[in-house]
Length: 278
Image (cartoon, rainbow, N blue to C red; front, side):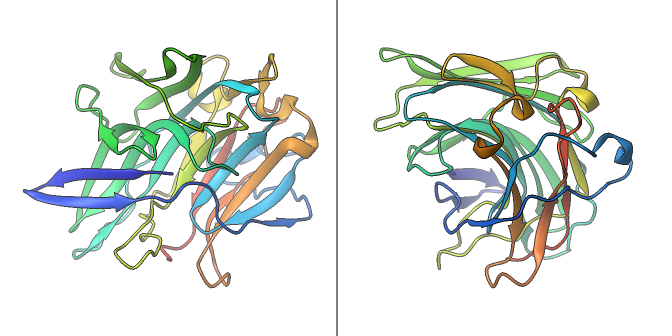
């Protein structure tokens, strides 16, 4: 993912986020942890392959090149649990096409950040490698239900991203063409954005637990995608194409964010903060 810049008290915070997962390690599939307050939901979900990333947690579904045409997700915007009095921390929640194993990402989502002791919430979109933009017409608050989608329209229009705050009813859409987009993955992600001036992943803000999907948000047909003309929830696709991603620190010694198993209907999951990293 991305290259996102936000203005705070007259200061530009340039958040340069690299596309894709970088080094990904495939490990044996395992059931995710049961996580309060919705622990009963997250068990005995569809099978998948578990992976690790230094900046992503959540789920990806992969397909052939030019096969992914739509992704839709929903989540409850989490509160910043604690913000240190100094410094900045970041956490992003989004849906997108591409980026798992390609150099572009077409995405839209929200942030729960910590800016010198103060929690900040906002929406954004990005057609990486182009810069990202804050969606000022859709204010975001902790506890809001968010619905977001990315659609490949056609070669003339390119991609269209739409983000809706279901709680307030405010919505925005943006379209752009992205050169070289492979359309070979769909993602539902919690992220520690990247990078500092030295290329390091930025510290992950403590968001507690973020809940994705219909079973928690009540938003229908999430989390789903259209891949190779087939429409379905995450868990409806081939097990070999479903990737459950845990976020680890750069050294590989700590889990920064843990992803639960899918719910039995294959639509929903959560991600829980563990450590700021990087």
